[in-house]
Length: 139
Image 1 (cartoon, rainbow, N blue to C red):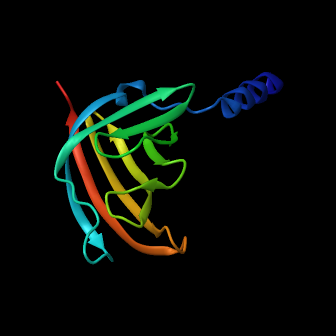
Image 2 (cartoon, rainbow, N blue to C red):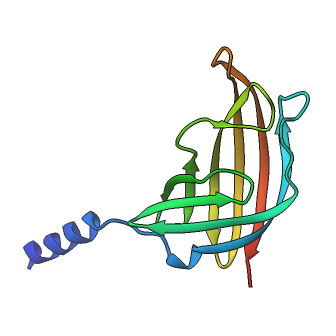
């Protein structure tokens, strides 16, 4: 009997944790800048849409004004994603790497969006911007 209980616990512990599929969808979001070390500010956002998708346990996060980010989501719906490479910006001479961390669930989204700007001529960090992103699933 003890062997059976140990075997069942081992199987449960080894099972991968998947996020709740109800986080998938398009969210109407408000984007508020929370911090910056940039002067002048390279980008500004106000409102927009964010699409969350999960395919083969890989999370994709797509803002309407930013390239797609790829990452993970855990069993508690905590998100972590970033752009795969540096992305050119509207500011000449600057590229950016975007990332998000946060939580989705119950029809709401709460993220911290970060842009790390890199000078293209020296390939060295230039400045950083951060935003709070919050919203609800679009109806």
